[in-house]
Length: 436
Image 1: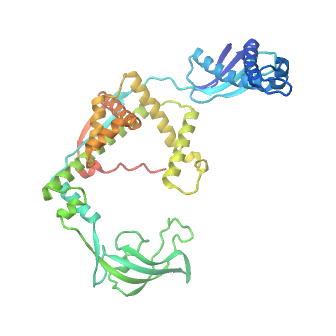
Image 2 (image 1 turned 45 degrees about the vertical axis):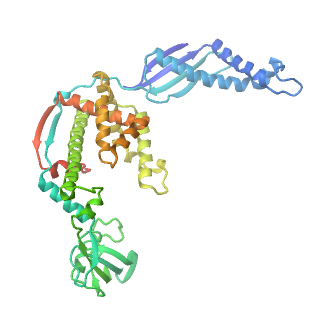
Image 3 (image 1 turned 90 degrees about the horizontal axis):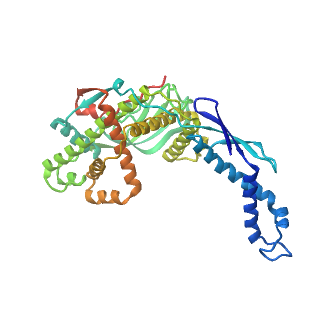
């Protein structure tokens, strides 16, 4: 087997492979002999068909099969011999494909980039420091009460926060428009569910009252036919219900699985959950900064094949998340290319950190992470046992732990600044950058 390799770009390789005619004929003959043992040809007993007849009937198919298998096997042999690491399937183009002659083909493919990760010292990290104060727990109790608000019929004028049952008919220039009418709709005033001005105009209304209001659709409204236009809505208020916050009592605590300990026991459980959320939020923000820093300090070119594969994965995820009748391939690739490239680069960089620093998942940290996740459930011991019986889930946890070890490795050399903040600021999600 003869092999030559040409670099056509930083990552693309053009490999020419020559396979001797003797090797080809050996493979063809193997297949013909196998065929001869089972072929059924009229006038001959199975296994007794002359090879000349077998060759006449089956040689073309045997040769095609042999050539396909030879290209596959010799490509693998060649990349091993040349110490190449293909990043995807090759595009194969035969150069010489004639019977009785050597086979020669060209395989064009991309290879994984070879690089060394560095620049940890240039990465700046702001690590937040926060505690869960009593006031934070008080605030969380109020949030939980509001999330469990009940509404009771009120014999008074509507106020912000009330839930109204309404019928409405909307018109523009005297003509009803699609989606502008409904009956029996439940609307909480002040929720911002309707277009600006709609809910405000119903404050002070009473049950049984009909009001005509004239709100204006925003200029950036998703329906361009309505954007910027003023509508006339005739609204009938069927009923008004006032919000009733639940009392902090045993019945309320039981909704969250706390059946003993009273208020203090419930506060302790809420605080424990908030502290877990706080740890995760701080850890996540540090990790994001480390990953951003690794990307900035280690710009690398990545194979287009890997980006394309990641784009396809993101397409499938998008269809699964949003449903509908779309097929993944109908979603434009450019919607996912930037995210796909970031994922691919990060995957390669993180893998190289693991390799260079000889990192392996720490078993103690794996168990600690599983126990942390299990603590959010009613019977944590069963959750821990389930993880240890599920190889796929265990591998996912090990991957997360390994990423955390990568973060720790970078933090040992990075420029880390601690910043004291409130609980609210620490757990607040980082806003995504606005597109230019």
